[in-house]
Image 1 (cartoon, rainbow, N blue to C red):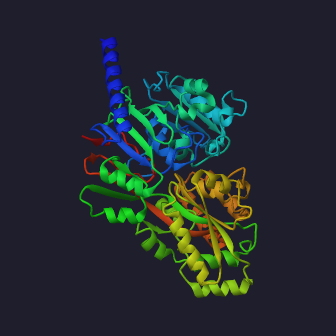
Image 2 (cartoon, one colour):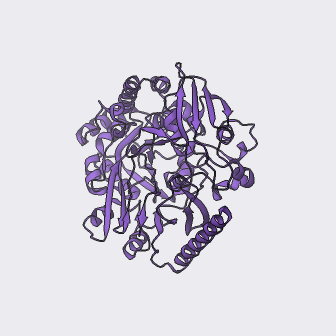
Length: 520
């Protein structure tokens, strides 16, 4: 009976792979049961511990699971691979009760030993597979002091000090559980051969063309679709043409003006939701003129964020007040965005003295979460010219752009950046602390403020929700006043899909689970 079931299952998977391969080879309309989703860029890696890109995470979220997960429609944390957990009174010890009967896609068991392997690979420099990194977001778990497999289904994490973001970080891709067996087999190439416990299993990756996943029949919640195919399409016009012809079923990265035009198209459905997204310009505080806070405030007053939101982004965003996006609720309240006030900007510029220009603004040609980067750079360039600050825009391909900006701004004065975050801790900790300057983090503008550093550390240890919110409000106000960034917008993510597609729900976490999405 079991052998017959396994044989039939293999036959179904084989036929599904054949159908998917035929469709991809012919560029025909994908058949029922095969869901095709566009990506804005070719993923760099599908190892969730290695990559930091939301583009890569969109694939990874369907292959892997974490001990916790974000609940439907919110940023609240609920059970994932851990069905429950207990926390000691002092906040220093977490014991997770793991789900039984879970296996990785390669057939190896998910148990406490596998979970322990995942944390030790990230955190222990002497671990035999630590060299399969680097792991840029390992700081999510740096407060873990000891990992213990109590028994096969109980994992204990002992912390160095209370750490409020832990449960949220476990739900983020950096906390996803990867197969130890597969990492040992593929080592540094694991990101091209991903193996998790998720509702979809990896089939293959054709560089520049497609990433194919299949239904994980062993999962407790089998997917509605037989196959899930991600296609990297970097040109928006090509992506639109593919959507209109039926070559793709779901688009998550069309430009705002295109999405706006499609709202009245009877052949597609547009959905939208807010999330913790921040789009800003990093200002190089190490070089003139942005080593002067008056100049940093001046550019914030000079740029018409409302016009950018309404005309460039077609209303698919809100104005950003600081590093804590409004999706985090009380943690972000009490600070309003810089008003559009060119007269005040000119006064600040006059007080500070002449700005030697032109200034260099780096912008990517495209990129996940970057909205309309070239158009936004052009709008900002025009607004700054109105107050006498000349700017030259230099564009780069996405991966080259990240390599240059993440290394820290040296000769450039400004650079566009976007983050989707899972906790109010992430952006301040990773991009604004003095100790997070490259190569130790993503503080690419070299901002330093000891008060902000202290507040960030206090907030990480504060497990009381109201107390945390108060600390983040203080961080928000201080960073807003220091203006190390030009604060611009917080995106409302969009999806455009064929009318035949059902069950698609965008999440505030920006992690799209296609498990319940169908096209029949």
